[in-house]
Length: 143
Image 1 (cartoon, rainbow, N blue to C red):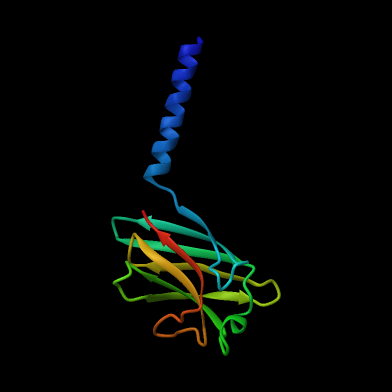
Image 2 (image 1 turned 180 degrees about the horizontal axis):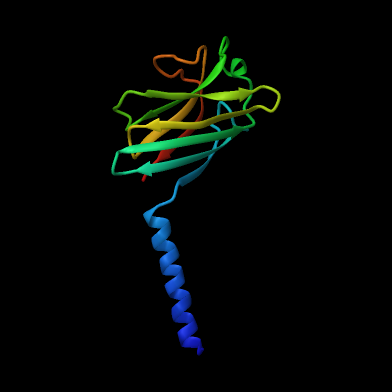
């Protein structure tokens, strides 16, 4: 095989890899904590289904302080989504918080959008009607 043929095949492989990555697969984000929780880190995986206008989200967070350290009386971390800043927040779930490891996880949640803002906030209960200002993680999810 000559060098020109090898380079052509290599470029073709790269083109297919880029095309495959652009056409599918989950979106992955490594989100850093907000100034309220600067040590927090979260891996957010979003599986967008444009045909049904739904996104499946999973979150693995670490280095999370106990919620009551961020807000007196807080007992939970709640996950929220909204289309944009003029939309209402929708509660999509709560992180299962491990006090000993200081981790939180949301194995799966469904968001009825394909592009949205996502936040995690400290809350006094698992099912509040709107988020507190005590946001520890924020991420824009876009297909």
